Structure formats: structure tokens, C-alpha cells
Image (tube, rainbow, N blue to C red; front, side, top):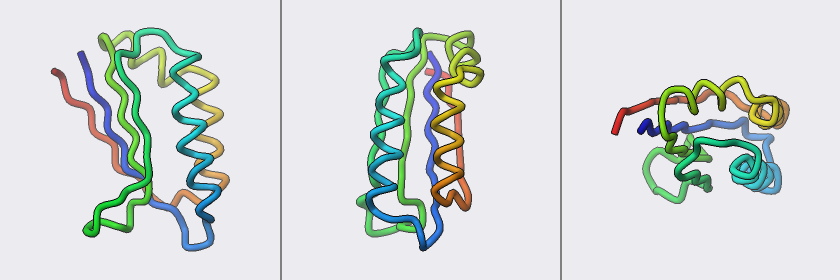
Length: 97
């Protein structure tokens, strides 16, 4: 299995409603993809590292499922929305479990 974690930083002009919409759209991806073992998304509630407002995690069955996710048009639409509402930076890491 492969676990992908992404932290996303948004501009100061991004609203709480837009952040919640990112979370909701990301969670909806589970309905459009195969090979996902688990998918989580939420607003960062940590007192430290507040500059990254959203945390996204996906656990994939294997590398093929991760590759399919990256190329999936529904995933691409969520990524475009994230950029549209003010993505400034993101950090992503994959680990093999």
C-alpha cells in the first residue's frame, strides 16, 4: 500500500467557505476512484504549522491505483479548484506501507 499526504497552504484571501469546499470536493473523490483503501481530508486544527490550512490523505492499494488517481479527471478538477481559490503552496509525500 501507498499512503499520500498533502498539506495545502492558501492565500489570505481564501475564505473559510472555500476551504470547506476544497475538503468536501476532495472527500467526494472516493466515489469516483478505484484502488482507494482510505481517504481523509480536513482543516488543520494544530496550533503549530497553521500556515497550511488543509490536510489531505489517501491510502492506495498499490502504485497503479496512485497513478490512476493522479491522471483521473475528477482529481484534476479538484486540483484546479484548489488553485482557483488561492493555493499558494503544497507539500506532498508518499510512503510505502
